[in-house]
Length: 483
Image (cartoon, rainbow, N blue to C red; front, side, top):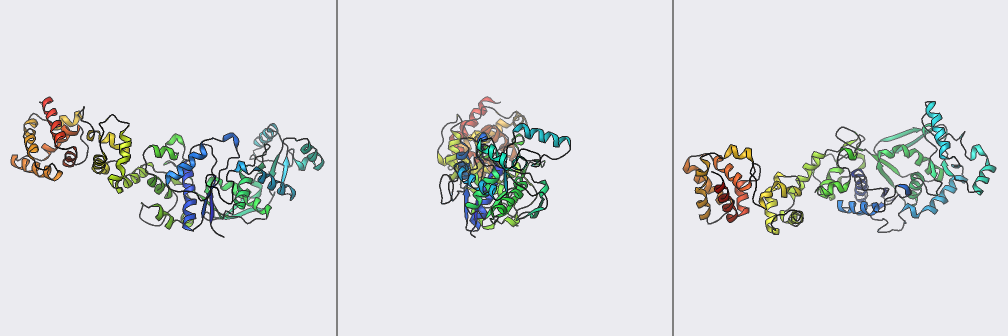
């Protein structure tokens, strides 16, 4: 069988970074094995449906650098790819289960179910549908069941789970998995509104779409025995399962919004490179058995193997992700990033600069930042003259004799044939040597006068990019206003 996998999200909001990783693992596995990766929208829960969510998750995956081979957008021979457009199919297959005794009708109201759960709770039992005492075709009998169906009594279709025995399946990540049948609930398969639950639709679609491997988060592991029973009830071969570990906060709790960013759009808006986020989440739970940490998409595809996915929850280390983003920032040619920096600068009231200048600034500052978005604030002095000067830095490095030490440099800088960083370096070195003073007595005051800050890039490189006219103007202005 050829490899066919699917990413099957519910369109209930923005794409969670855990969902991105699930989609990515499916994509990497498909590409590694020359197979197909399908997007299927599981929108049968109409109460949680968000109209824009489908488009948003497709765009999030596209931003991350991968496309689906078949989807609601692209179509394909196994469509439609929205479950809400396949309801007749699910009704057809629920009827097969009813006819072969693998499922049954239940007519319980929500009040009936609440009372059942209350009784079980008082008895110290785990909540579970008890078909031996509730209103279903086994307790009501065939005649009463037929009458209720004829009068269109609200009803659901439930899976008939064996009372005894074990349900076993093999998981590529977790090995042999065993559930006791007595612990499995008689899951609702078809709701009273005619829509299927995840469980029926998932199994029917995976079979009809010829899915070979189901790669999903471990939170779906408890649902898998129900799916195995459904495959058996239909007489179908199960796909291979692989349940990947959850993403966890540093304190090992499940990732949630209250602990920080969790949606792909959050990371995009903060200025993370898509390549960095993809690289990072790929390594959250998967170990390619290498000391390297930076991988291109093609390299991830080449090395990916489900057998190397870990069982334990994967810690989402935000600091590590920021570091990885900085590595990508430094890997680009500055001229490639310059147009994006110009877009970022549009939201600041700085004088306009050109692409070449923006590229020079990126090359100057990128070793000291994690995000392109940091440049307008970290390096604001590259776009506008400083209006404020670091008080602590000034008190430490602007002494009564400093002005006399610095002033001669105005004429020296003016007479320089070439205002390059090397020429500046050489002439300042000659100057301090002639005065028999330490270089720091010049460098720190220059940084203060020109940038207003005590932290920044190399001073001579900074001055060279700013240019002679701007450097001299800043120095003269500072000297006029400071004794």
